[in-house]
Image 1 (cartoon, rainbow, N blue to C red):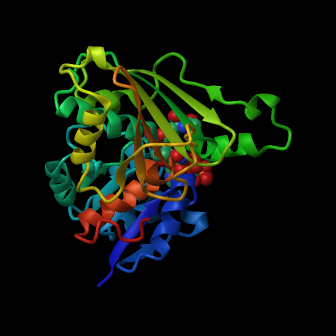
Image 2: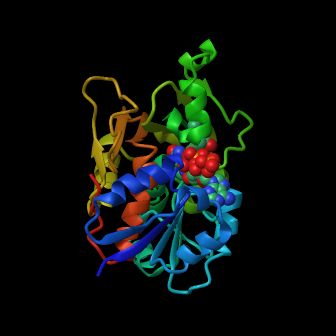
Length: 309
Ligand SMILES: NC(=O)C1=CN([C@@H]2O[C@H](COP(=O)(O)OP(=O)(O)OC[C@H]3O[C@@H](n4cnc5c(N)ncnc54)[C@H](OP(=O)(O)O)[C@@H]3O)[C@@H](O)[C@H]2O)C=CC1
Ligand SMILES: CC(=O)N[C@@H](CCC(=O)OP(=O)(O)O)C(=O)O
């Protein structure tokens, strides 16, 4: 028997990606809503309460509202928005962080899919804190380069407009006031005592992301070389099908290296004093719809990698 899946927000950037991934999934049946009813509360409610898994690919406020429409206790909601990521009643959908979290995801009916920039930051920083390499007080900072699909339909339109300003040709730093919406989950999930100083940068390419965390080893809690750090992080993610550790010989790290995949590669570069850990992945893959499918596979007891590359 196939599992019934409903996507609320099926024509948005994340919703469409999700739909494409699920169309070839052998174990699921997609419940599609007609174009004229896709914002109709009664029809959405009807479909949601008949589904096994509901994906929310909506802006935050609409996601919160959508949750109130689900009355059937058997329905599992996987929310792609920021609305529930630091809500203790929801499970954070990052199964690689611990076997216990993966078990919780498998049983949960409320899963918050991680934010894209947050995925890159947490993948690098969580093991450092967990393994006692840094204290929760470590003064983290990070910069993160994203393709413009990260801004959804609105930003895609701006970047692809024929009459756009010349500014769109160059990388643009944003969230300058240190109030980016992913900062709360970055701090909450890693257990840091303060949020990092975070500089996201949007660039003139469609999809792909790289999040770079610079480190000063003299501020570590224990003395450790770059090679030892690499081995420890490799060991931390050894069970993961999607997170791998690599070194880049060419000296260049393109942000679109992992476009179209659910993989995330951690590049640990530098020397024994100044080290960078850079997560390279797809903002629409492991940063959004890929991770959402991975969480769904876990919830449904399927192979975690089904329909994901
Ligand atoms: N783009 C990305 O890289 C990532 C996005 N996300 C998150 O996923 C969510 C969706 O983002 P994204 O796909 O980029 O955004 P888009 O703007 O591309 O799509 C949002 C979709 O939601 C629809 N929508 C809005 N309000 C309602 C409502 N009340 N009822 C039903 N449908 C509604 C919109 O309809 P309409 O088409 O009519 O405007 C649109 O199709 C957001 O919370 C975002 O933060 C998460 C990770 C990465
Ligand atoms: C380029 C751009 O604006 N990107 C968005 C991130 C993508 C997104 O929607 O974030 P969530 O993963 O939390 O949903 C931003 O930085 O706010």
